[in-house]
Structure formats: C-alpha cells, structure tokens
Amino acid sequence: MGEVIVITSGKGGVGKTTTTANLGTGLASMGHQVVLIDADIGLRNLDVLLGLENRIVYDLTDVIDGKCRLRQALIKDKRYEGLYLLPAAQTKDKTAVNPDQMKQLCEDLLKEFEYVLIDCPAGIEQGFRNAVAGAQKAIVVTTPEMSAVRDADRVIGLLEASELRKPALIINRLRPKMVRHGDMMSMEDIIDILAIELLGIIPEDEMVVISTNKGETVLSDERAKSGQAFRNIVRRLKGENVPLMELDGDGLLTRLRRFIGLK
Amino acid sequence: MAFIEGFGSRIVEYIFLSLIWGEIFLQFIDQGNLIDDNTILIRRTLRSGQKVNFSGNVVILGDVNPGAEVKAFGHVIVFGSLRGMVHAGADGDEQAVVIAFRLQPTQLRIANHITRPPEDGSAAPDQPEIARIKDNVVTIDTFQSGSERQIP
Image (cartoon, rainbow over all chains, first blue to last red; front, side):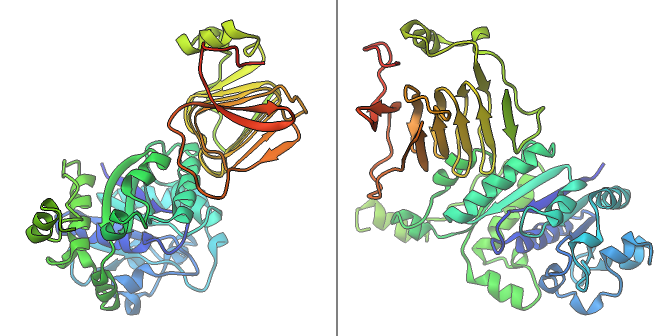
C-alpha cells in the first residue's frame, strides 16, 4: 500500500519544491514508483526544477475536469525510471480545485504508485487545504529564521487539526558556521519551539542553485553536501535509522584545529 | 464556557482540575483559592494562530508558542514555556496572576495593564516565574512554591 505525503511550510521560499523534487528523485532512484503532484496552481515550479517544462500537455485541472485521462497528464521524468510528474495549471488559480477532488485524485494515483508526493503552495488558504486533503503524512520544511519557524508552527497546528497528527520536520539552508557564532537559530532552538520529529537538516549549498538552473536535482550530485542530506532523508522516510550527518565537520583538519583550541 | 479556536475539538482535552494532578498542584490548592471549579486544563501545546478564551482559570500542560493567545478571566498557569500572548484577569480582575515554567511572553496583560518584555533581550529565565500586579505595576518574581503565600 502506498503513501501520500504532503510537503508544506506556510512561508514561501523555504524550499518546499526543491525538497519535493529531491525526495521524489531519491525514492525513484531506489526503484520505487513515485508521482509528484504540483499543487501550486497558478504558480507552478516543480516542472522547471525537474526540467520537464516543455513536455506539459495536460495538467492537474484537466484531469479533475475530466478533459483527459490521468495517464495522459502524467509526465515521465527524463532521468529516473518510475518518476512521474502531475503538473499544475498555470493559467488558473487555486479555486479551480477543491479538497474532495484532490482526495479522489490521490486515491486514484495510489492504485499505481508507491509514493505520491504533493508540493504544497505557500500560505494556509485554499491551496493549502487542497494539498493536505488527500495526504496521510506531512513533512514541514523550515529555514532557521524566526518568520519561517513561526509559520511552520502555525502550519503544524493546522495539520494536527486536519488529522495529520505527526508531521516530520526538515530544516533547510542551515549555515553551521553562523550557528556556531550564535548568528543563526540552531537546530535545538527550532526543535524547542516546534517540538516535532526531525527528519533531517540540509545545509546551505550553492550546488542547489547550480543544479536547479540545469533542471536537475542536487540529490544525484555525489559531492554535494546537500545531496547527501537529501539522500539520508530519503532513507529515513523509508524507515531506516540514519544518524544526522556531520555538518560542522569541514574535515579532519578543522576538527583537529578546534580540538587544540585554534578556533 | 470555553472557546477554543484553531484546532479540532477532538484534539483538545480539557477536564476539570479537581479530577487529577500532582504534588505542585495540591500545594497551590492548599495555598489559597487559586483553583476552583471554574478552571480548564489543556493538555497540549498551543501553536501559532491558536487561541484559548475562558471565563475562569486556564492551566496548560504544554507550551504556548509565539503567535498563540490565552485569555482568561482568572489565572493562567503554564506548565511549559509561555512565549505567546497572555491575558489574565481579562474582565478586570487585578488579583489574577500568570505563572509559567518559562515566562517569556510576547506580551503579558493582567486586567487593564499591558506589558511587554524589556527590549534589551535579557537572558531567558531558567526557573518558574509569577507575574502579578503589585502597587499598580505588573511585577515578575521567581515563583517559589510553598515558601511563601504568593497566590492572592
């Protein structure tokens, strides 16, 4: 039996779409059948991140309106076998869909896929309600900023009210150096307020920008730290017990230096 | 009547305090008339955007996060970190108090007095504190259970 997971945050720009794309490619690379739904109707991005923009013929609203069959709207990924995208409409808005329709859509997709990942739009209005309607599990993405954490807290409250009891947390764009100097919220600060299970921490990484521009996901980059972080999260999603990676360790030398008190 | 907004009613459990509680609680009861029948217990954390309004005392087993609001005609006691907005004695009772394990509210109101924490960002408290009106000023002291009769 498959799983429907919604990736949400409240605040915009914290990395929901990037996370969705990476988790999707990660699960697909492990041989799972995965479909990504872009629920951000009117402001679609997920197709761009995956480099599938020019292959869109039908979209989510076409499926819901019965203008095409579900299969016709699904776009197969270029690189990963078993990864599909259901793109959002760009010329409509969030009111084009309602929560019941989304629920039905998720049920239909579950018949064919092991994982259905929903990229939730920013905000807590109808777009959010649509995105969470069919989900069984939620992942909340936040960055180490007060405003993002505040919004994440709000969203967790709303998720709990809609029966998505135990959301998991991903902290994105953490800068270990700034945390060390006390200039940025630490993992502990965030967990202290949000008090939910931590799924993983992704360090700030230029490689994310580079791979996004190429229409690729950073997860497939063996050298990127953020890619490693995403790979670990995928394994945790599958139930494996993977320890948090060492973000601070810029290698043995730095640790040694710190040990003898040079830094 | 309690008006609890922002989350499903099934999640909230509130029972009258006379039913259960631990040692600290019994001390409170011994010390004065803090606890009466008109009290609700909320056994969860209040998150941003969630709000509790009650015409008596409110006791919260959990945190009150920034962006959450608690408004009570009586006392407010938080067994956790209080980081949100709190209003005790909301119908004008100047005897009302606010007690929290970690008292770090965004804004603290008692009756008609409105206060906010000092701007200098002084260190977070590491022990329970009590806020109440003394000589017409909202004062915050370390809460010492049992050592003196603190509850009006």
